[in-house]
Each structure stands twice: as C-alpha cells, then as structure tokens.
Length: 225
Image 1 (cartoon, rainbow, N blue to C red):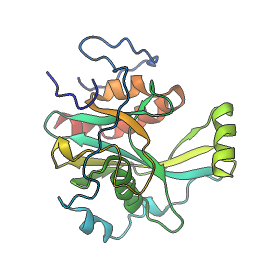
Image 2: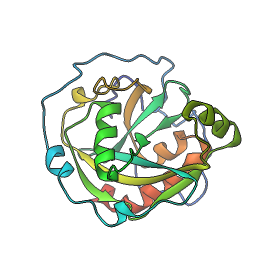
Image 3: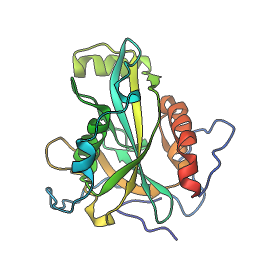
Image 4: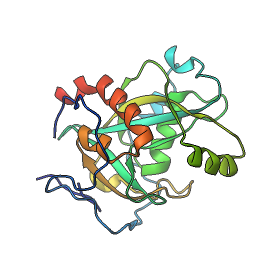
C-alpha cells in the first residue's frame, strides 16, 4: 500500500479515452477533505545535483520561442523512482484540483533553471535530477473566466500558457517535501501525494488534461523501466 504524505492518494499505458474529473477514485485513493500545511525547515542543505544542472548550457529546444500570446511557463513532473509514481498537490484556491508543480519563466531565464527554481519554491525539493525533457513547447488556453481573473492578477492578458516540461527523478526522502517551499514565495498547495500517471490526469482541471496526457505519454518509458 502506498505511503501517503499529508494526503491521499498504478500503471501505464495511459488510457486512450478522455477521462472525466471524478473525485470518486477507486479505493483506496480518496482525496482528503482537510487542507493543512505542515511547516518544515525552510532552507535545507541536503544537496544534490542542482548546482551542476544550473551551470549547464541550455538545450536548443529550451531556447526556442513559444507561440505568440502565450505566457512562458515550465512544468515539473517529479517521479519517485521507488514506485514510479508522480508528485501531485492540491491547490489552496481550488482544493479539488490537483496538479504537478509549474510556474512562470523570468525574463532571460533558461527554462531548465526556471524548472529547478520553481520546484524548490513550490515544494522545497532540491534533491532531484532532470532525466528527460519534452522537446517542444506545450500550450493550453485559459477558459474565459480564468483568463479574466489572471488578467487582473498579472496585469497582462495572455491566451494561455506555453510550457516546457521536465521530468525530474526524486533522490531525497519524503520529509524533504515542504509545501511552504523555500520561503521565498506564497504557498500554493494544501496537500500532496505520490500518485499514478492516470490519477494525475483524472484529478487535473479539465483544460489541463490534454497537456498532462501529452507530457506523460512523452515520459512514459521512464515509468516502465
């Protein structure tokens, strides 16, 4: 039985038909009702391969320009090598929606470095290494209500997000994961768990499901090794 960490919640291939969001996932996987964040030490010295990754030259695919009108973003698929499951967390603003870490790319920032930074900021994780990358930008459009909300929040009107996705292999221990992140940004998640690729898709908001299906299909060989 899987170890659950402040939350809930197994196998490829991904389903060939669209999955509908359904919180009644077969036992024993039930998203919890509470949404608490446990404070852990914020700045950890565990360390790993992030320093060497940050110094690497960016790949050519990382430097390609995303489609016009889309906000540059990175997505992080953090895999637990012991059980081939993926880190996912529930959003504080939409508790029923679970997602993989993601975040914007700063001006002149290489997407690889942005992914390392976002993983640390959102989960506190530094013990990880990049093992694969989706070789192109993957886009999704915002629903109209979400687009309007973000227009006010960001002060910019984006059609959606263009994401460069990276697969990270987690090399640390579960107690390193801290939803307060590294303390530099406001917390975004309430709970987290290692879940299967199928569950990652099913628990995502509807407009992100196609992206998750594509990304996890690209990374599927790594979950079968």
